[in-house]
Length: 306
Ligand SMILES: C[S@@+](CC[C@H](N)C(=O)[O-])C[C@H]1O[C@@H](n2cnc3c(N)ncnc32)[C@H](O)[C@@H]1O
Image (tube, rainbow, N blue to C red; front, top):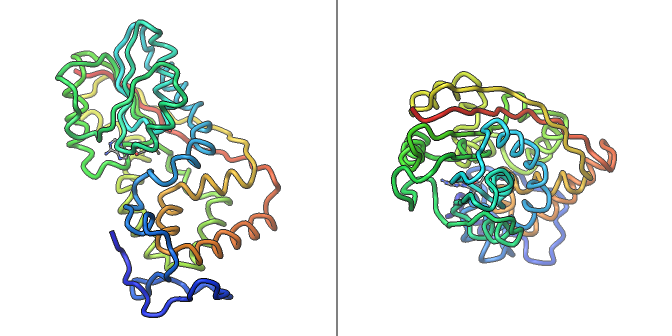
C-alpha cells in the first residue's frame, strides 16, 4: 500500500544524505528500499515480530499476569486470547488454566504467532482476526485481549463476535494504555526527532489509521460504557502504573515497533531510515542514561457476559 508518491529523483544508493528532507503529503520516498517492506502494510506487525518479542513482550508480562489474576481463571478453563501477538497473555493464562485447560491465542500476524509457538508453554495458536472468529458459539469460559482493542477498525463488530464465542457468564479481561501514557520525556523526544523527518499532520494521520481508538479506550469511563453496551456486566475498571527498566537501545528498538516507528520506517525508506535511526540515538545518548526507567499507565477492565 503506497501512502506517498515516489520521488522523481531520490538520492541514489551511496549518496551521502546530509540533511533529512521533511516528508509531506506532497513529498515522496527515496529509492533503495527493500521490495518486501515497500509492499507491506506497515500497520501489520509482521516485519517487527522479532524486535517486538525481544523488547516489548517482557514489558507486557506484568499487566498480563495482573489481568489473569483479576479474571480468576479457573483450572481447566477454556480461554481465548485475542490479538495474542507473541503469546505473553496466553502463557500467563495457561499457567492458571493448567494442563487440563485449553488456551487458544489468535492473531492475524503469522510472524508474531511463530514467536508465540516457539516460546511454547501450552497454548495453541490460530491465525485469525477478531472478526469472523473460527470458533463455534459459546466455546470459551474466558477471553483476554491485551493492548489490541484500540487497533480494531470496527470495535463494535469485533466485540460482537468475541461475545458470540463466549459461554453465558463467561469472563472478559481487557488492557489498554492509559490516557497519560502517550506523552512523556522519552516519547516526546522521540516524536520531536520524528517531526524533523515528517510533518506532524502526517504522523497524526498515521496513528489514526493504525490505532483508531487509542484515545477512546484510554478513557476509563468510555471503555466501561463500550464494554457495557457490548453486553459485559459487573465491570471492574482500574488503572495501574508499571515501571519497566530497560537499556536505552532496547527502548529505542521497542519504539521502532510502535505504529509510528513502523510507519516512519516504511515512509522514509532504507537510507533516510538509517539517518533517522542514528539521529534519534545521538539525541537520546545526549539526554538520557544508558538504562531507562519507563513508567507506564495501564487500564485493566474485567466483567462477565450477561
Ligand atoms: C500491541 S500487540 C499486543 C500483543 C499481545 N496481546 C501483548 O500483550 O503483547 C497487538 C497485536 O494485535 C494483533 N492484531 C491487530 N489487529 C487485530 C485484529 N483485528 N484481530 C486480532 N488481532 C489483531 C497484532 O497482529 C498484534 O500482534
